[in-house]
Length: 208
Ligand code: B12
Image (cartoon, rainbow, N blue to C red):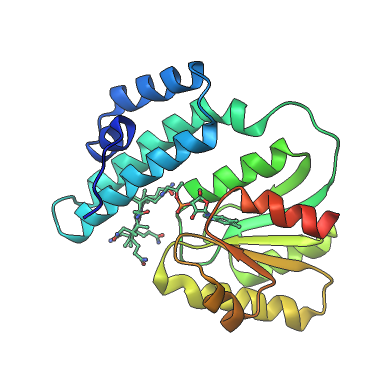
């Protein structure tokens, strides 16, 4: 079980919404980096996942945790998204079919928007054909996919295969906590990461 020492991580693990919101605001005011705050929240959410696995938390707690994180993201969004930026190009993003987790993807979206990209966010549970259609329609040089469920890794592989078959000139970035280089090689994606800010790093590679 993860050993939590940070007050904010503990507050979200204990599903103490008021404390989470108060600490997020306090840290933002104190000038703490928004991604540092996200990391602390994520640590606490990992604990929630562990408590769910061991049967101490139920689905209702998982849902509650997601809602608290959404509230915290609302506070963090202005700092993550930044100010007006020069337009740098189109990026299509979504969570793959069968998976409805979107909090991590939404952070990637905020960071990309904040850097000046026009992000076409297809949402969650997105079938492969919809990704292909959106890439074509928007002439997007980069497609980003998110996944959290092990059972949906095949959905992700299917998207990458369909993209490669389509002959479209688009790079594919896959992300999520269970994504590693080995899986990237196996499914044939161009880039992989489990860090939101890497979305920007790889976008810079693609858009130059
Ligand atoms: C909140 C939560 C939910 C919420 C989701 C709310 C929402 N709007 O997203 C709800 C309640 C809906 C939910 C449902 C389920 N969940 Co859930 N959930 C979680 C929990 C607690 C937190 C996930 C989260 O948001 N983390 C915070 C975000 C910020 O982190 P993140 O997603 O990892 O994203 C970061 C990086 O990975 C990266 N990233 C993510 N995507 C991308 C994409 C790109 C391109 C890049 C570059 C980076 C990147 O950037 C982010 C910031 O660094 C996790 C526990 C955990 N360990 O994470 C379980 C967890 C993911 N859930 C799990 C399960 C089993 C389920 C359910 C099947 C439960 C059930 N019995 O119904 C359902 C599945 C529903 C479905 N079809 O998808 C398991 C998955 C196990 C597995 N690996 O397969 C976990 C790990 C819990 C556990 N330990 O058992 N869940």
